[in-house]
Image (cartoon, rainbow, N blue to C red):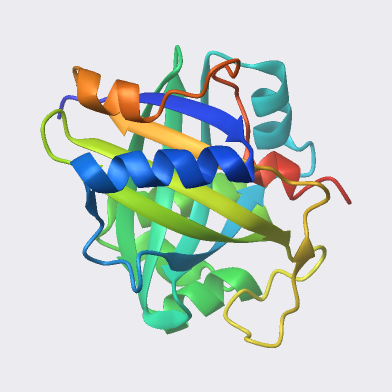
Length: 225
């Protein structure tokens, strides 16, 4: 199967930028129909090894890299996704597989044998990398997202803010697992598209004086260790 990589811009923006860009987007794009009140809460659990391979590759700007995470939305643990994000020369692609609540909890708890017999290739891949590369649950990342969609070009524009870290707690299905602000985390504007970025969206997300950056919510949430 041919991999489909997508283009991606990330900008750290101010609250004033958010208000201006949001107003322009509302005139030309549509809010993600899955968002409640125009936004949703995301909780992710990221994986790394004892050498912090994923973190170091991100910081060092390694050309070909990947990271694994488990994610759910708005506190709804009935729908959980295992995801692998891969980057190549600044382009990104994502693989996803559904997990039950029980499967996700077993991964958090280190009960992995069932994964070897899974019919989901991504689950099997994570199993192998947990066994042989030493991947393990590393940090919880919480944040709020406001998503917009522009269908020509398959464009997705998001504002991410209120980024929080679970510190040493990795029991991400536990509602009592407290998260705290991840330092002085910025508001993040992300723009993703396939073959072309329509001019109407390019104009809508313009932020004079700001440039695309390689910001990582995972790296931000590792600032305390």
